[in-house]
Image (cartoon, rainbow, N blue to C red):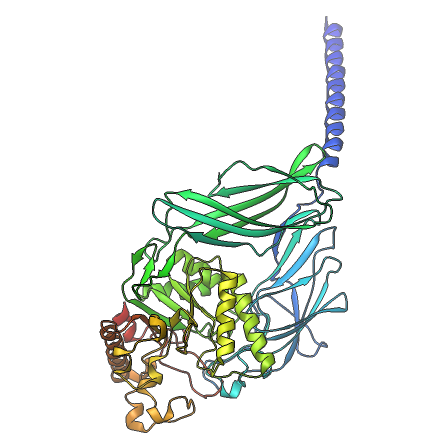
Length: 586
């Protein structure tokens, strides 16, 4: 009896082994078949590569750094001029694979040369907008940056005469985009809105697809809004072997849309999926997820009031913002960018003007989510420069549009060099570029030119004060937005209108809006009086002139190239601590 039981146990064990071996064989067979139908790595990736960079001033001594990075920590109190010079960054990317790979620098100040595996591949001018480097066949990256004075790079003016600083370094993110050579979206995807109302809205999507017909014969595109498929996708046959890029212009009707506004900043996620077959399996070759907000801005021919989603807006209360922080200059992390947007909104403002350059994407993302209207600006300040400078400034208009046009928060595109003596030809071309890139985009400029710019956006302080704009009628009856007020008109006399180095007499200086938190109660109360007086006068002027809003100068104190002290007309100090006047707006 005992032996029989033992024999049975042995037989069962042998049967289990047979079953396990057969199961393992079947699993391996299907795994091999499956592996032939699937790519070995993801076909598309977006990788943040802020870590593991090396930094050097001389290419002899290198230190490890993390982006965003500034070449030199700058003191709050200016003891010497902001650093300018040449510096270097280098990094080894992940191992090269069979992917189409693009390295995107969100910003680098402000003349960049890039080498890939020792080969010079890019020379880029401009410190506030992104540029790309193709790294499909290399992984050793070296970047040389210069932030020295250069009259062909906007803003163009020498630092010693400039009303802000341009700090150095790789001060924003760097991304690695990996896509398939066979099938991919081009990254410039444009979304705009037509016929917007609460019943329905048309979402227009423009994009390009690049494909390789030698390996793929067909593909399809999926369109999803917040995860819901908008309509069944059709299979597209690649019938023309000579084409490797196809442009799409798609219009989608959204029923009962949740509209975006400063009071209800409703957002959607628009997903575009690009699919095709490898073997018998359909694979997602590429996917783009875009945050959008459905809304419309317009000025109607019979009125100079601004209409948002068909409803007239009241007087817009706004502010100006410089992006620098103490010590790190421009190398500000995303959470600090979001914190700035939150503080602007918490102060009671509807709008922020990005003076005088495009801000970080993180700041615009925060404005989208908080419901904060934005005036986006190209780099410029009291400088027009030569033909090369002007061409670079016009390129900034186009690149700003291509980076930011999908942000619902952007209300105006300031395609104008701030306080600069621009030619009519330049202004007309800048205005036209905005319309080419975004047909319903609204432009603003600080000069009142006929048939140029949709909004006249002067600085109140550079006119006869305080009554000049009460009965001013802009050319073509265009609306007026007072882009700056509250500072210079309480600091300089009319005879020193654009003379930034003018030093007032002591009795005038006591009445200035430039008051630091350490200046005590009298100075901070004086600042409140100035801003309240100017803002109330702007609102009064809106009763008789086509003034839609104003923006004070400025939200945060900041440092300047031309002056030894902090510009202290902010309603918060450079550390983002409130002064008395913060609570007036709140």
